[in-house]
Amino acid sequence: QVHLVESGGGSVQSGGSLRLSCVAPRLYCLGWFRQAPGKEREGVAVIDSRGTTKYSESVKGRFTISRDNAKNILYLQMNSLKPEDTAKYYCAVRQIYGCRIDSNMDYWGEGTLVTVSS
Image (tube, rainbow, N blue to C red; front, side, top):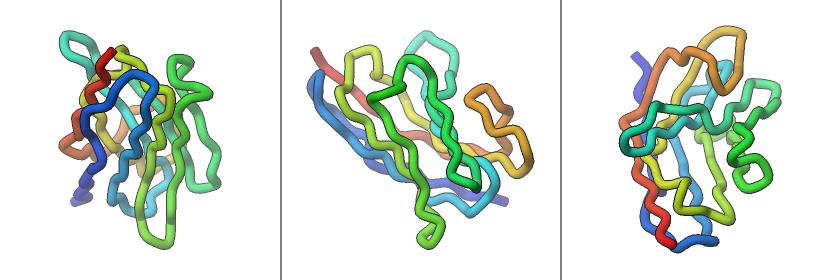
């Protein structure tokens, strides 16, 4: 069983920054997903074991995903935050090939809430 723990969520004003962290094992594909109230969950960013990253169009250029394999930590640096980024953010992992923001992930964290006010 894989246990994922996110941290770093909070409230910030529009234009501000936050960094999310997730203690995650060194599996093939790690990613961040989010779900806003009344909306479906969507992929935000993923990173594979080679460091290849993919982003959703809505966050490209503002968010950066990275992983520290020595510490087994996944990060999401979020800059220039907008009110529409308000959501619960989830860390997830996938064990095998196919690392995309629309991939089916194998394990999920409990999520951390990000609120951006205008």
